[in-house]
Image (cartoon, rainbow, N blue to C red):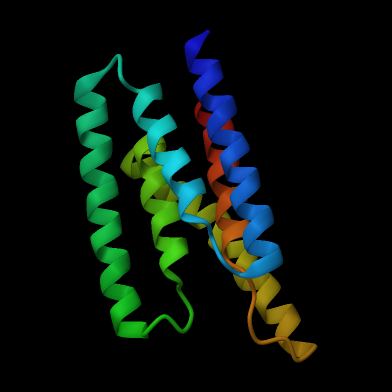
Length: 140
């Protein structure tokens, strides 16, 4: 029962983040914090799994920050990094990699199609949130 409650809260945070990023091109820190806390509380009964997930999230965050510094925030925003790292707590290392693949492939296709229309920037957050949500459904 409690797992369902945490998953519903987590899913609501994903919808909020995707919607907000689509409208403003900004991922709210509060939404990522909500994802992080609901992911931690959802795994509180299994400390070993939580520790592995936290390590995966930390590694992903550090790798994302490195990419952000190299790219100077041109294509990958700090909110995208926070979103993936916070989601890694719930999904674990392999789950977040699947979610990234599920979100980045459609984003790449959309970017290519929109580029033909002269639109150079897209919000990555809605695609990431959708990929993360799909993987979380699959893992339930």
